[in-house]
Image (cartoon, rainbow, N blue to C red; front, side, top):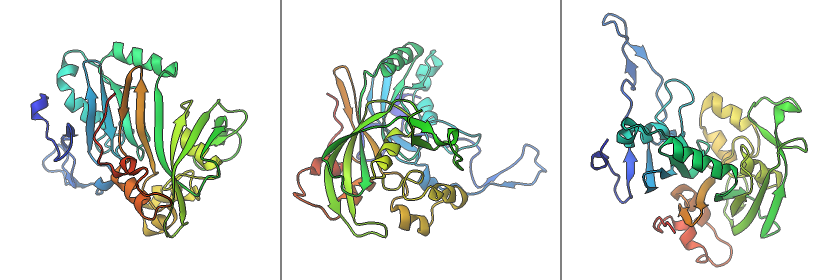
Length: 313
């Protein structure tokens, strides 16, 4: 697809709206004209926002800002549009000329922020090896329950899948365990604030620096420190929220407990060599943080507003 044919959203830089896959909709007919139409359950498109923003691009890679609720790649047949679907549409020319897209880092569906994508196999190999050597500098922003006692602290806790050592109804859930893989995350408090909610009144915005890259690492370490990430269905107030969400979807009852319909985690910065890519705090998390502040409300305004432009250093 030529770049000038890409639709763009107002007031955004290279925001891509990729096309809806053929055959999706409320009804789908079988191949035979005489076959009755088969009803498909409606998809909650609010949870699968089919757009993303290109922060930077060259002949080797793309740097993407992924919104929350957008899956990075297909997981089951017939799933809603994913980031990879949109990238394939965006890079149709490169793919036709022998290119190959590879996600160098991946984010959970609900996590927003920076994703690095290689455009050919050689780039994927180089970037993948750099990631394994821990050459990338990553930082996240998260909204957590409570006020940490220290302004900066390190969680050094090996991670292991819970089901390997005790019964767990959730296969993917991780825990801190001495038999797990080495995992370290440094946390820095950006702001402590208060707001009245149905579940707590004290919250903090923290910057997270993972020194390793384990599954769910930041989420597990935040909960282990006693400051779970707001909106986290799996590591938040009760893991039953995760099971209930799978069963019923988002409900007012879940909102009363979790407060946000997604985990308040954002991949805010990625650095490699002399490059640094940044993404401002998304509007939903900025709104949550800006209601009721402690201290000087202007100290970190640029980090919260989402109005500062994309920067590449």
